[in-house]
Amino acid sequence: MSGLIDQFGRTATDLRMSLIDKCNLRCRYCMPAEGLDWLKKDDMLTADEVIRLADIAISRLGIESIRFTGGEPMVRADLVDILAGVHAAHPQVELSMTTNGINLERKIDALVEAGLARINVSLDTVCPETFAKITRRDRLTKVLSGLHAAKAAGLEPIKINAVLLRGINDQQAAELLTWSLEHDYQLRFIEQMPLDADHNWTRDNMVTAAEIRDQIAQVYTLTEHETPRGSAPAELFDVQDKETQETLGQVGIIASVTEPFCAACSRTRITADAKVRSCLFSHTETDLMGLLRDGSSDEDIANAWREAMWHKPKAHGQTQVGLGMPGFVQPERTMSAIGG
Image 1: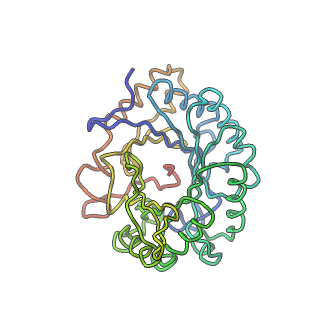
Image 2: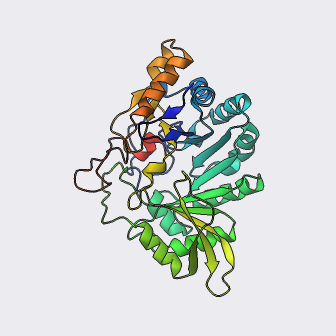
Image 3: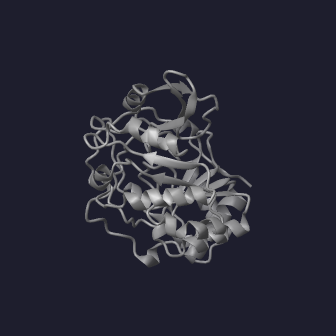
């Protein structure tokens, strides 16, 4: 029984599964201030359908870990039921979630009890004014309280995902890293990608991985982390005190645009409306919703998924054109509609 293999020899073992396209923030690099046209409830996967797809992915396609994404997955009222259903059937599979953290404090105990093992929290700054400017919401206190609650609940490691925006928080890399080290969070800087709803992204205006490293190097010494990167999207660096050379922790940089890692990609994605996306930047999708709802067998669904992944592009949705380079076409779907 074959897994999710593509024509370039890569095997997908990491499933990113979006549960909803809605979000309770309006981050500038993701969506416009007034939001987007959300999916109708009937067009989204039900809890039972999510659990069924997860079972197919694990039992038939070799998936080893699942991260639930959005939008904001905690907007779904049945999130705990989804986690509990997948965990009960496959307790050996790590279940994680990417969240903005706003509702973590209120829901963390139920999420952990249901089987959540790890979280990634999107947090671009620890400055309240900057947070409000980026997200268009005054919610930083809630995010910080949620992080504290997650740590108290025993979730480890807790990863922080940060995007630097030119002219807004582009000089806060070292500050955010210092804060993350002090609180024992694992910080990951992510280059801003052309998946914004406003289509305002330009390669020239993006804060690059090289710039991020240069900023951090003004405060800390960065050395290559000894653990092989493998298929991980983040390149890890040890962070050392400049005077004592003591290792204080690690920082990761996900340089999807300037230093792509497509050759090692091990991810497959399902959108909240049950479309297979073999790559964030794909212009094609394979619909599984029809198969889920027309009586098709699990193996029929698995075969459609295999076919979709076999045609995964070599790089960035197109075989030759880099992100933001002449000839690149941004996908119609935004990051919130795809799932991070």
